[in-house]
Length: 133
Image (cartoon, rainbow, N blue to C red; front, side, top):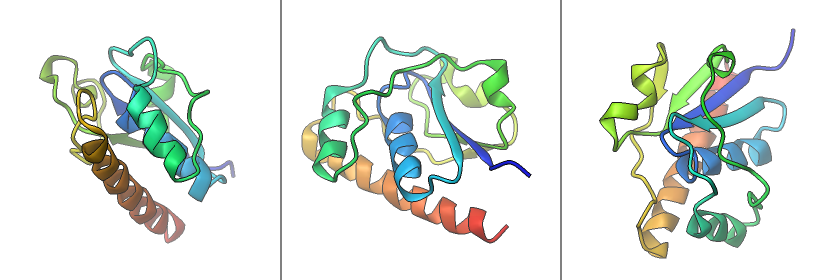
């Protein structure tokens, strides 16, 4: 049996879902992980890259990707939260875990750190659940 696939989705794939991907790669490398967005940005949010680097996780080589049907076939799909209801991944994907995490876009570094820490906690809880199923 192959490893579980986990897909983190958001709109721009420049912040929250990228942090989640970075955390899962660090804390549970046995899982296959990818992140994507319905309207991906051209680059990662620089503040997000900075706050992840502060805690020893380098995500600067990750890139925003467009959500595809192939990605949706992942075993577990986590929607990071939607500010843009028209392009919310939940509209396009069924059976989604929804974390409803604030978008770090246009937030100050302290707010982005809080979002980072919230995502870390969600990731650690997800790993516990996955390891018991």
